[in-house]
Structure formats: C-alpha cells, structure tokens
Image (cartoon, rainbow, N blue to C red; front, side, top):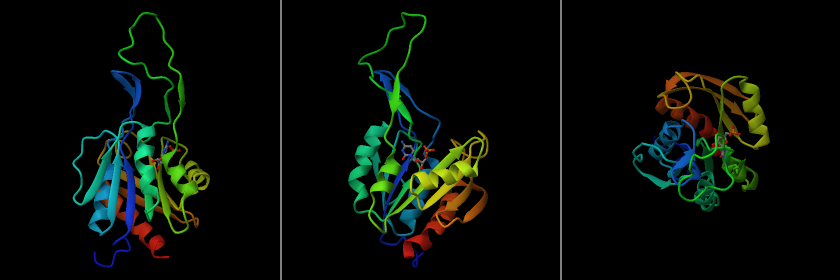
Length: 220
Ligand code: C5P
C-alpha cells in the first residue's frame, strides 16, 4: 500500500524462542515457532518499511526484503538488537525470550552421576523493556503478552511496567492460539486505554491487524 505510515520507517522485530545453554549439548527453551514475529516482519516490509528481524532458532524462511540476524540466547539477542535501537522508529518484541538462564553453563557434557541435580538459574535481560525505557521521543515500543489464564489485567500491567505504546495479548490454550500454531486471537491494548478484540485469525492476518493499529501511532 502506497499510503502506509510504515513506508520508509525503520522497524526492528524480535522473534522466536531463545536457547539458554545448560552444557555443551543441552539447553532450556520454549515452544515458540517464530511464526508471529516473521509474519509481522514480512508485512512491515510489504508496507515499505526497512525491517530488521532478530530471531532465535526457528525453522522459517526469511521474508522477502527483510534483514535477518540469527541468535541463540537472550543475551545474544540483546547484543544483536541493541545497536539497532538507535535509528529505529518502531520496536516490536515478538520473541519468547527465556526469562531465566543457567548461571554457569558447563563446557562439554554433564555426566549423570548423582540421583538428583540442581540447576541454578538467573534472570535474563528484558530486551523490550531495555529498548522502551531507553528510547528517544517518537520511537514506538510494542510488545506481546502471552498468558495461559488471568488475561487482560496482566497484559495491561505489562503495558504500564514496560512503558509500551501497545500490547498484543494472546491466550495460550495450546491449540488455536499462542505457540506453534498458525492462528492467533489477539486483544490489542493501547496506552490510551483502548481495547480491540480481534477474532481468531491466521498469524499473517493477525500481523496485518496489529500493524494497522500501529500505523496511526506512527503518523503522530
Ligand atoms: O514479561 P513478559 O515476558 O511476559 O513480556 C513479554 C514481552 O516482552 C514480549 O513482547 C517479549 O518479546 C518481551 N520480552 C523481552 N525480553 C525478555 C522478556 C520478554 O523482550 N527477557
């Protein structure tokens, strides 16, 4: 579309899971497929934006016109994304970043000797919050809130805590919405208090609706 507010804008998208090393052959991760983030990146590029996609390990082709950076861990994702913060107009955090990582990954393979073993975890950096709290006026920050229950109140809290402009809340029911599947039912929460409930849609269409909601914010 010629009249898109995204035309010529620079967009950074994070996508996929992260992998947090336990030892040389094992990691902690989650079921994120990267589909939502890739769909957003693809549609933003189609609308004429310069799109940089920082992704954890996924099995997806790079969308046309998108510049892709592959990473594994949350720390690597932040290191790859941070240099892109400065010049971007919009940051969309669609990655399912692991909240914790093993404190001291072991080199080589841990042997099974004892009957039990303990894994000590430490908090990972929050990539979206790092961007949102450090950004310059005019830069937009958009995030996702995936919850199994409880819902919109948690998402609203995330919007406030991470100082975001928009949060896409999605329920993870393990079937139709959330991780790994091709569809998503998003509820968009705006900083202005607006609530937009979208129906269950293919992730490509959900991505389009999300960008439709972001465009007016970019025009301001
Ligand atoms: O706090 P929570 O992880 O539920 O927030 C989800 C949002 O924050 C998503 O947009 C996700 O991409 C982003 N996030 C992040 N770095 C983290 C954790 C979450 O960018 N370490």
